[in-house]
Every structure is written in C-alpha cells, then in structure tokens.
Image 1 (cartoon, rainbow, N blue to C red):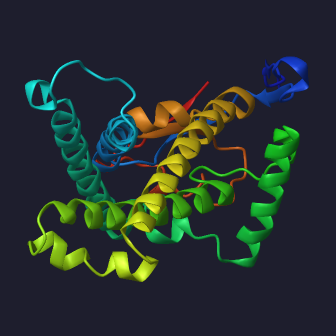
Image 2 (cartoon, one colour):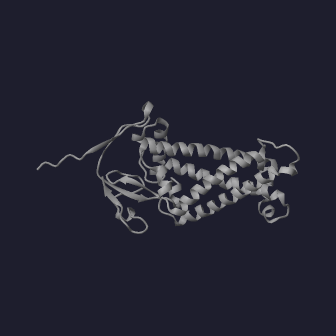
Image 3 (cartoon, one colour):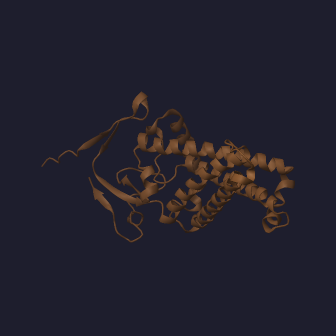
Length: 271
C-alpha cells in the first residue's frame, strides 16, 4: 500500500529578494508558552512609559512649544515634569517586576535567556548577525525564544535603563537638596564630573532608547514577515505555534513537559 504524500504549503518570500520561499510539510504543531502574563503586562506598560518619557523629556530639555503670558498662568513646564516623573515611576515599577521575573519566569524569561555566554550561543550570535545583515533567513539558527542577537540587545537595554534611572533620580533629587532621593543619588554628580554631565548622559541615553525602539519594532516585523514565526502575536497571547518537525537551538519540541500550558493542558494539534 502506497503512503499518500504529505501535502505541502508554500510561504512566499518578500519583495526585492528579502526572505525566501519556504516549503514546509503540513504536520504536527504545538503551542509553546513563552511570555507569562506579568511579563507581557510589564512590556506594554514599559513601552507606554518610554514614549511618555521621551516626549516629556525632550520638552523639559528644550521646550518645543511655548505658551503666551507668564509661566505662572499656565504651568506648562510643571505639568510636563509631573507627567515625566509619573511615567518614570511606572518605568521603574516595570523594571522591578522584570528583575523578579528573571528568577521566577519561564525558561525563556529567566536570566540565562539573556546572556549568550556559551560557545554555541556565541557562534549562533555571529550566524544570526550575518543572517540579519544579509536578509537570509535560511542561514539563521532557529530559536523559539530570544535569539542571541536579541539577548545581547535586551541585556544592553536593561543596562541603559539602569543608567537612565540613576541619572534621572540624581536630577530629580536636585529639587529637594537634603531630601532622601538627593541623599541616595547625590554621589552620581561628583562621579561623572558635575551635574551638567549627568544631564548629558541622561539625554544621550534617551536617544539610545529611541534607537532601540526603532530597531526593536523593525526586527519584530522582520521576524514575522521574513521568518514567519509569530513574534508579535506572542507578546500579546503569550505563546506561539512551532512545528514539531523542526529543530530549535533553545527548545526541544518533542519534550512533552515543555509543550504544556501552566494549567497542564496539552496544546499540540495537526494541520
């Protein structure tokens, strides 16, 4: 008896040669739980707070619109500063939760997932970088979670976030010399050579975050468009669909313990 051929489906590459035509057999797929609800909530809260911080921060540094009359009549700068400080508080809160989730999260959220320190991951870091530079997704190592290039990007961003928070609190403390925040972060200004240097570092780090947001959105769109991996939807639903007949560097799709939701319900299915 002849075994019928397994149907195939074609994923077309993008225009201008970006991506490639991918032929994949229909077969077994499974939901893989990547990002837990607290991490997803903190992701979107942090994204919103970063936008607010950038907009209000640039205004505080150099007001890009002015109102007529005395400053006491409209209090525009005061409102901008209040919104900036409130967004900073939200941003710090998301950071605290993220630090906790480096220890309590899924295998894709914990600390080892952010540091490609093994020889294999360092090799995959180079391969991923070449793939991104040449738009050749067929040469890129496959990951269910963050690939090594993304791991490095997020780690650097977290360090920049710490720098932003420290310099921001150092500036905020100047409004109440002798207060608690001034006492806690008063060492920053002498360390970097003066308050003006603190402002410069804070401003430069803001531009680093602007660049991060641009590249972050681009790479997420690229992953979905070129690699067809469902990255964008995963930060909303918490999971993505992966084929069980493919090999991933950071995940064994045939291990049943890893293909279950927190409730224990198995989510593999056929297509």
